[in-house]
Amino acid sequence: MSSGENSGGLMSSAGLVRYFDAEDRNAIRIDPKTVVAFGVAFGVLILVLNVL
Image (cartoon, rainbow, N blue to C red; front, side, top):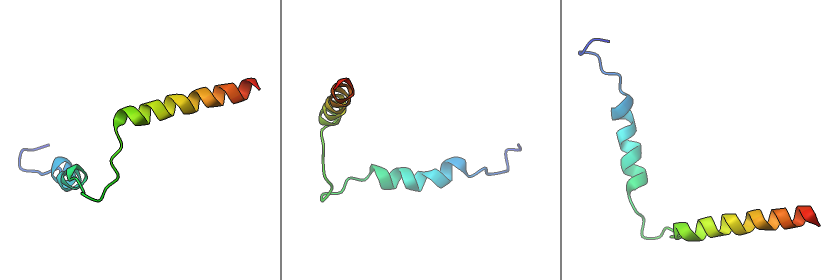
C-alpha cells in the first residue's frame, strides 16, 4: 500500500470511540464489581438448580 492511500480504518472509527466514550448524565451507572458479583451469583444459582 502506498503512503498516498488512506485506508480509512482508524479515521472512520474515531467518531464511534468519541461517541461511546462520552458520559451521559441520565445513564444508569452500575459498579463493575456489582456486575461481576451478579454474574457469579447467577452462575452459582444455575449450578444449584442443576443439582436439584
